[in-house]
Length: 462
Ligand SMILES: [Zn+2]
Image 1 (cartoon, rainbow, N blue to C red):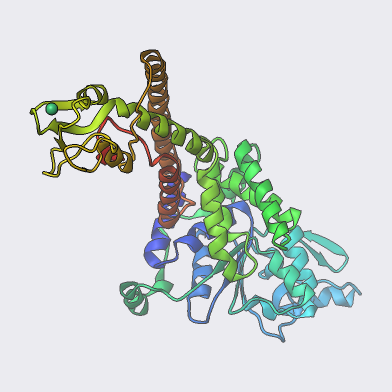
Image 2 (cartoon, rainbow, N blue to C red; image 1 turned 30 degrees about the vertical axis):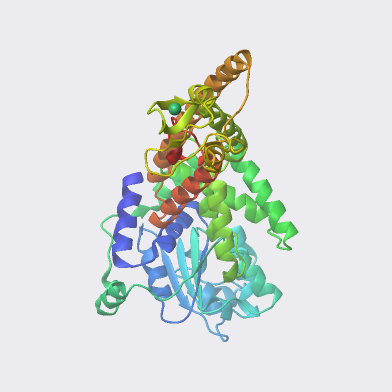
C-alpha cells in the first residue's frame, strides 16, 4: 500500500512541478475522506491538478462541474425524475451527479448560490442527500474545490469554506526551468501507472481508527488551540477532531503504529483561514515537531552550567603553553606558573607571538607588561587564583561527573537526531521541503542549547 501511494506521489510530482504539498495533501485527503480546496490566481493549473487527483482512484465515479452564479440544483444533484413527478413524488435522478460520485471536483465553488448551498453543505458534511422524501447515503470520499479567491463574507459560503479541511494556496510556478516545462508539457495526458481502489481506501480508514496518538502530540494540539484562541482565531472542535483523524490515517498508511510529533507539520495545510497566516503557522508546527522528547530548552540550562564548570576546571591547565623568556622554562599548568611567578622579574610569552607578559597585573617589574591572568580571562577561561588542595580535589571530582553527564547527553541528542531523521525520511506525507525544514529546526534548537561546550583544554574550541 505504502509503495503504491509512493509511486502515485512520484508520478504526480513528475507531472506537476512545485506542487509537492498539494499532491501529498490531496492523496492524504482522499484516503482520509476529507475535502480539499485550491485557492489561487487564475492560470495556476488548480483545475488540472484537481482532475488528475481524481484519476488516482480506480473504479470510482467522478463528477466535475464548473459552477456559476446561475448553476441550478439540477446541474449538480441531477434532473427531476418525470415519472416520479407524475406520481406526485419529488425525486431527482442522481446517477452521474454529485450524490452518486466517489470523488468530485467543483470548480469556482464559491460561486455556489443559495439554491444549492444547503444541499451541498449536507453532502459535504454528513455524506447524505435529501432526495425528496428519501435520504440517500452518499458514497463521496472527497470533493476538490477550486476558487480564484477566498469566499465573500457570507455565512453560508463561510460554512462551505469550513468544510474544506485541506486548504492550499496555489501560486505560479517559481522556477524558470519548471515554468518552461509547464508551458511545453502535456499535463493533461497524465495517466498514473497505479491507482487506489475504493476498497483499499476503506480498508485503510478502518485500520487507522485504532492508531494511538503520542501524548506530546496531544499536548501540542492543546497548546495550539490555546494560541489560536488568544490570537482571536477560533477553530471548531469538529475541525480539530478531523485533523487528529487525518494524522492517524497518515500514520497508518505508511505503516506506523502511532502518531508521533513529526506528523504535526501536516496540519500546516489545515489550520489557516487566510493565506497570510501560513508562514507563521508552518514555523510554529515545525518547532513543535522537534520539541519534546529530549527537552532541549531544559537541557540548555544544564549544558550552560556544565560548560561554566568545565571552563573553570580547565584553569588547572593553561589554555596554551607559556614560556618564561627569562629562564626558558615552559608551563602547562596554572600551579607551576603560579609557583614560578614568585620570581618577580621574569617575563613570559605565548607560542603564537613575541609579545611579553607578566603573570599578574600588580607585579610591575621590570616594567609594566600585560597580565597573562587578564589575557586568559578575556579568552573566556578565567583563572582561579586560589584554591586549597582539598577544594580542588572535590572540584575536580565534580567536573568529572559533569563531563560524564555531558557525554551521555550528547549521546542522547545524537540518538534523538538519528531517530528523528528516520521518522521523517520514511514519512511520505512530508514534502522534501518539510523534511529539510524539520531537520534545520532541530539543528537550530540543538545549537541554541548545546553550542558552548568544552572540549579538552584548547580555548579555540570555545
Ligand atoms: Zn623564569
